[in-house]
Amino acid sequence: MVKSIEAKGDTIEAAVENALQLLGLDRDDVSVEVLKNSKSGFLGIGKEPAIVRVSYSTSPGERAKSFLEGLLIRFGTPAEVRMTEDTETNTISMELSGEKMGAVIGRRGDTLDAIQYLTNIVANRDEDERWRVVVDTENYRAKRETSLESLAEKTAQKVIKYRKSVALEPMNPHERRIIHSALQGNEAVTTYSIGSEPNRKVVVALAGSEGQQQRSGGSGTAGGGKPRRRRRRSGPKKEYAPGQSASAEE
Image (cartoon, rainbow, N blue to C red; front, side):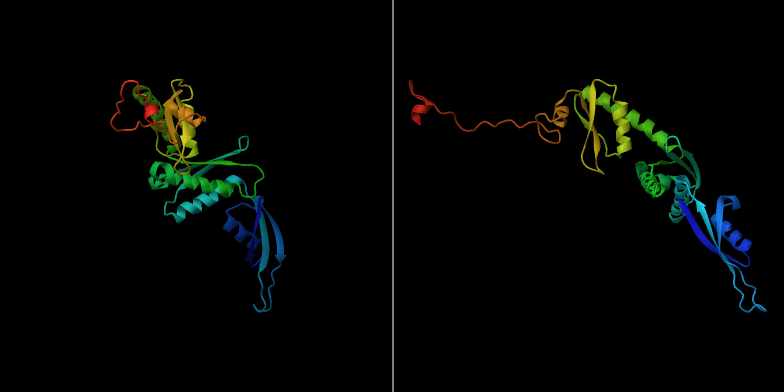
């Protein structure tokens, strides 16, 4: 994406230098268009500055980094942002470091996920190809993945031992995929998701269990409940004389 700004100065070179300082770029990174030459006037009267338009190209990663730095400052959690772009996989990695990263991560990573979502929108604005942005700090993503894989294994063992399905806490789509993937090779259990966002959660159940049949359109009630049994009528049992049947009485 090409962006531009206009700048003024006593001379054209001064105007260009003012623009470069505002952008934090070098002269080789921009193109310059002179909009108006400076006028010296007479004894300072009628003096006019030079005006230039400085254009520059921004990559998705640069836009994402600039947005993220400004967002963190406004949140009161300024951080250093290290950005890398992988053009082969269209992936932008943003690693944050600072003093208040616990607040940036939030409860179970909710704040970090929200920041990542907004940064993805900014990075992909006016882009023909889709870029994936990953925002991380203090290696939180890897730690969370390891924690979820451990949770998945422990839950599977619990399901096998007690032969009862277990619904996990609500998770975002990425974390649900980690659970599904972690138990994909376990033939004793199966996993599926229930509910609507943002409260959608993973259920771990015995393979071939009633909950799995319901998910695939089998019999049973929604939500994993047991099928209802027909109730027998209560009341004293009637006695009939020898040779007399219930139909005869009716």
